[in-house]
Structures are given as structure tokens and as C-alpha cells.
Amino acid sequence: MSVRSSTPPHITRRSATKLLGGALLSGLVTPTFALPQQTETKQSAPSRLLSDDDLAFLEDMEHSACLYFAEQVDPSTGQVLDRANSKNTTGTLDNRFVSSIAATGFGLAALCISDRRGYHTTDRIKKQVLTTLDFHLNKMPNEHGFFYHFNDVKTGKPLINSELSSIDTAILLCGVLTARAYFNDRRITDLATQLYNRVDWPWMLNGGKTFSMGWLPETGFISTRWDHYSELMMLYLLAIGSPTHPIPPESWSAFTRPPMNFGPYSYISGRDPLFVHQYSHAWFDFARQRDAFANYFVNSITATRAHKAFCLSLKRGYTDDYWGVTASDWQHGYTAWGGPPLMGPVDGSVVPCAVAGSLPFLPRDCVRVLRALRDNFGKDAWGRYGFCDAFHPDLHWYDTDVLGIDLGIGVLMAENLRTAFVWETFMQNPEPVAAMKACGFHSERQSTTAEPKTTSPNT
Image 1 (cartoon, rainbow, N blue to C red):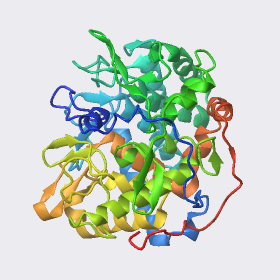
Image 2: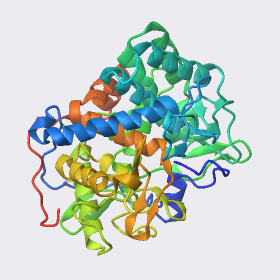
Image 3: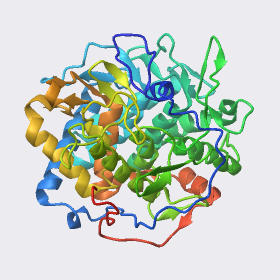
Image 4: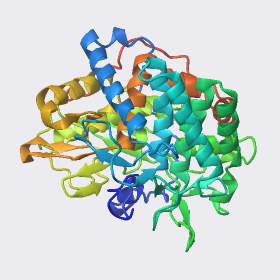
């Protein structure tokens, strides 16, 4: 879901995945298999798992990332830049012009974190939130309430070849609803509610049982659909919970949940990068909840363990202190890479947001990697906004950019690990709660204050 903003947006996070063959599993029958018996860990008391130094590091990482969403934003539109220079030292707005609605959605949630932690004044933050909501409601081009993926940061006009994106609209709305619940401000509530209620979810089904990935003015609906388990859960739950244009709860069973096996690990996943197990979890609180198919929080724990084992199995320089690859920049552009199974040109590069996005799932393992990356490569890999998007120290390559969505998933998951703040705030909205209930989610009444035990000597 990102592009180099100096060129038209031809390659996105999802289209890169499709090009690598990761999104074509819709022919599989929906399985109902049992996941390994593991216990999830919702981190309301991270001090039981992490040291003071660990928590201090997470504070630095969050503060740095939140700066991005306060500085790399157009003051008149509230749109957040898709990417900016990683070596920015002054906080000046990058001279590129591409915003993404997904980065803006992450940004709205990051602003709530900034206010809670006192990174900026409440007046400044609320002004930015109001500007963002008003612009997207009253001035931003949309169709049936859905927004274009990439837009001009100053005008809001969609870029050439940019699609009306169903999933990125969902990410934006997750940020919108987070702000609505957190600020409890009449103006914010009114604008946010109108944005959510305006979306005509059945239209994006295009006569089918699953959502189209998007729509283009010239050619109409995109033929590929959100039809197998991925980051799509937030899309379906927002649509099912809509008070104005809902889709039926039965739609929750319309997408497949293909089984993935790697070594001792069995879990639900398509042939997709690790981020698909993170994005919906940034807002929706799936901990200690399951539906007829799975406990998705435990599923993401298993997926993260499998990914670590996969990286170490490649013998390409990955260690307990250095692992994690998900859709990101690499030395030659943007790609969707990772595994298992092997996707793309995994060459020993590391992508910090891969482990940052899994912080609530494997706290100790992920914090260990992030701290080691800064300790060992900080001079080259760390800047005003935290880690650059990806790097390969053996090749002396460090990305010159940071990406809004990659900083965003890291800051939200770090805060969820520390305090569960984003989960608790977002789930104050009645619509997500009602949607999960309608889809058959119920409590498993399982909890623990300890991290799940490993099932593999390599993890």
C-alpha cells in the first residue's frame, strides 16, 4: 500500500503481493481446523514481560513515529504523506506530494496516542484531527463514500492510475473511529460519524459475496476480490457493523481461511507477507475471542513464530537479533516479500516494521530485535522518525525513506503492547462490537500474564 511518490502509483503493497502469486487462493474451500493449543497474551501489564530499558526504547520509538504524523502532513487538508526522507533533521514537510489514505488513517490513531502521551498540545492535535475529518468529508473526491488510494496531498485529487480502494478506506475509517471515541468532542463525533455512515458497503461487493479490491473510473470494479484471509477482517467487520449501509453477517463466512503449515506451525494464512496478520489487529481487539473458525490473536502469534523460524532457516544472515521481512522497500524499489513460503527476493535485508507490527504477539522476541537493530545500526538506520523502512547492512544499503503505513503499524502495536490503548479506545465504538457479536465472536475465557511457550527450538 505504498509507492515511491516521485512516480505514478503502479505498485502497491497489495498489488505487489498479487504479482508474486500471493493472493490467488480463493479456490480453496473454507477449512474449519483446530489451531495449535497456544495461549494468547494481551499486554495490559507489559512490565511483567519487558524491562525498564525495553519500555524506554518503545517510548522513544513511539515518540519518533508520532512526529511523522504531526509533521509530514499538509496543514490545510490533514492528509499524511505516503513517504518522506528518513534523514529529515528539522521536521520540515517533505517536498513530495503523494498522500495515502491508509497513512492518514494510521495518523489519526497516532494523534490520539500523541495526545494521551503529551507529545503535543491537545489544541494542536484536535485542530489537525478536525481539519482531516472535514476535508475528507466535504472536499475529498470519493465514490459511494470510498476514497482513492493515493492523492495529491494539497488538493486531495487522486493520482493517475490510483484506484478507489476498499481496504485503504477501511484503514482510514479505523483511524476516524479511533479519534471519534477518544476525543468525545461534538464536532469530531459528527464529522467522523458522517464519514463512516456515508460508505455504501454493498456497492463494493459488486454483486458478489466478497468485496472487490477497488474501482477505477475508466474500467469499473477491479476483478480481484478480498476472498481469502488477510488484513481484510477490518473491512468486513466495518461493513457488517455499518448502521446505514450494512452487509449481512453471513459475509463473514464468504472469504476462505486457507491452512498454512511450516515446520511445527499450523495456522490460517494465504501466501502473503507478515503484515496481513497485523493490520486488523491494530484496532480490533481479538484477544481471548474466537469465532467458529479460529482465535485470530493466537493465529497471529503462530504466524509470527513461523515467520521468525522461516527467516532463520534461510541462512541469509538472520539471527535472533536480526529477522523480519514484510512488504516494504528494498534496494531496487518496493516489493511484497517474506514468507513462509518464500516470497520475493529475500536477500538478507531486514524490515523493522515486520517485528514492530507483531509486538503484542511476541513481545520479548520483537523488542529484542528492535533494540538490537538500533544498538547495532542506529547511526545509519535510525532518524528523526525512527527506523528507515528497510536496510541491508552487509550491502551497505539503508533506505532513504520512511513510510507512513510502516511507521503507523509499529506505533499502534507498540502502544497496544504497553497499555492496550488503541484496542480499548477503538472498541468503545458500538459498531465494531456489534459486528463481532453478529459474526459469532465469543470469549474463550483464557488469559495469561506470561508470553506463550515456544513450540520450536529455533523460536
